[in-house]
Amino acid sequence: MTISRASRRPIQPKLRSMPLRKTPSALYIQMHQLANEKERLQEELVRVCDRQQQIVNRLAELDRNLAQLDLDVENSAVNAEMTEAQFVHKIKAKPIERIQTTRGATYESMIIEY
Image (cartoon, rainbow, N blue to C red):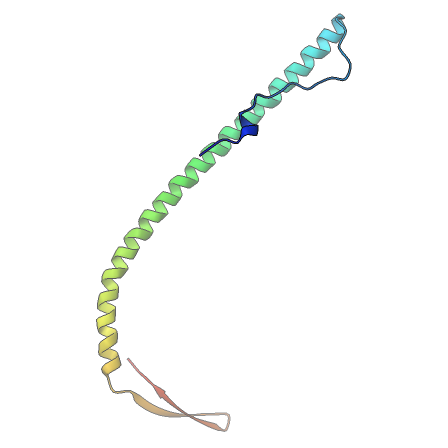
């Protein structure tokens, strides 16, 4: 699995249109903004980890399902051979002819009973 170029770039800080002055209030604002960005990135990291775990769990479930279906295919192949032999025997049996009447119309049909 490859990572796209966009996701390999480092996360850039937001650019501001005006340079900040070095006053105490400006420094506190900058500290507040950085703390908010840090919190946001930590929350995003938690979401990404949760999603990763969901994906890993789903992949494990798919592997189990594929293994079970593989066993079912092998078992049905054995059953198919027996069913095919039984089917051939039933086809060779003499069919029973019936005449069906439905709502006044008469239909001739042949039904193969097993």
